[in-house]
Length: 103
Image (cartoon, rainbow, N blue to C red; front, side, top):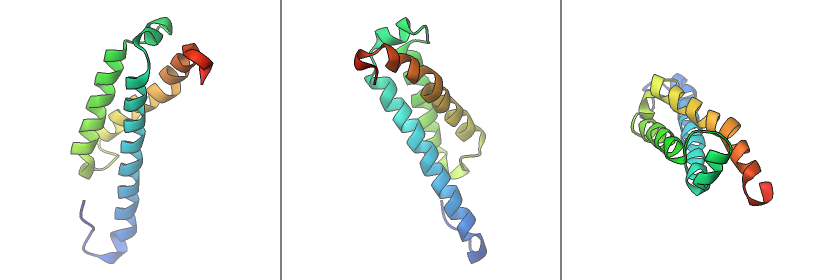
């Protein structure tokens, strides 16, 4: 993502770059977390399957990485962020509670 020609817009460009990096970071953390959790925990928590979450989060991360220049507020960035946040806020705590140690 190149910076704007006029220096007045550089802070906005930097803000957009920071937001893209944050969105990609959240999606990557959610994807890695979905990979390391056992598939039986998803079934025990009555959430979708492990494969479902890995596919959703993988596609979301790939779309954000490929289309990152379109900004985190593009349709794919928003959909990917929502998917990652649903996983992190709803699915992950339910699965972690069922895992060994609960942490």
